Length: 464
Image (tube, rainbow, N blue to C red):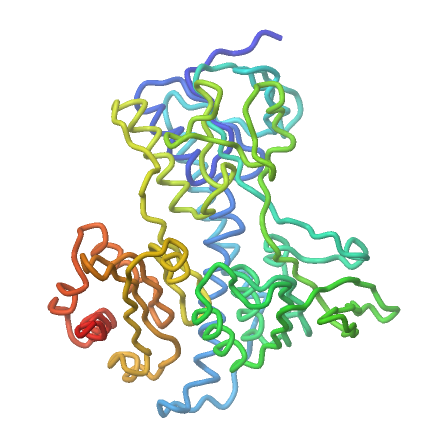
């Protein structure tokens, strides 16, 4: 079979691949966009969009149950999981179909559904979803295939019909007793969500604390918040065996400090990490180098060691966020088409964990500052001292910022509180613009907004 010639091949229609393919086509390039599953990638189909729809439903349930302190007593409410799922499905399908139509309507762009694998350096074979195959070639190839759930080696795991962050979204009934294996971002979001829907929830984390990449005060406060909702959190613990009982329950053997105990659950969610979707790409035919975890190695312009082959988004390792994947697209597009010289060096890495309250993070943490032996200050303000938080009636969490002692520049921030991501974004813009902590102390913000309390946050370092 003679390969069909394109200018550009994009493998994966995620948050980098889809906009890149469209922009390249609009720039006059002949583009093939290959997608094995659905347009939109993880974000639209089983990541950001559906989970945040469910977070909103969980927040509504929590508000209904916890409004007596603001004078609103709700006698009873019902969680309609089937309707919650339908609402989520409708929003996801609408976004997916919109993206698909947009791609199909783009001139110079061929949208191909199937599995792509390299046959040599610049040739890709596609096994079409509706049978048959195609052979394509191009001088520019972009890999945007994302990642997948890591499945840990636990005895009996494959016998208990476990859930992942993808399959749990198919539930239309609330689990009676949910075991979450993994105490980081995904596990905590789902754990709190399903506790609010009515599940009993146990979170097992192997390391000594939750959110091991965050500062210890963040980890401690998040744990306190979740435990207030009667979530059972066991750190320094490990699930070593799972077994299905005769009555259909899952019996988990949990090890902690050398001691073992058994507990029964209705459902098990695996949330211990993510791995790249590179195994079936045929990259061994290209010479493209991978790291020891299977992620594609790239330089600061997102090009692999093979000229003309790039990797974008989660598949290249590093921060696995939608906004980083999208920024990857803008870097390669502008560099290749507009002849700019952008790199990934020093770009901000903001992110948000959508527990309630949110954790918004940008820049370095206090642990990072210590490791780098910086001369720094820490500004810390409990949300109980934020006027808007008091007025709203949600005083959980705190604001925290890391400041260079000499220059007074803001090096990083962590906002654990209501609208934490939005407050963090204000600080990100200050960091991007070089606005100092002293200047933020006296900025005029609208009253009574959450961001107004940034005045008070930076007041904490006035005499330091």
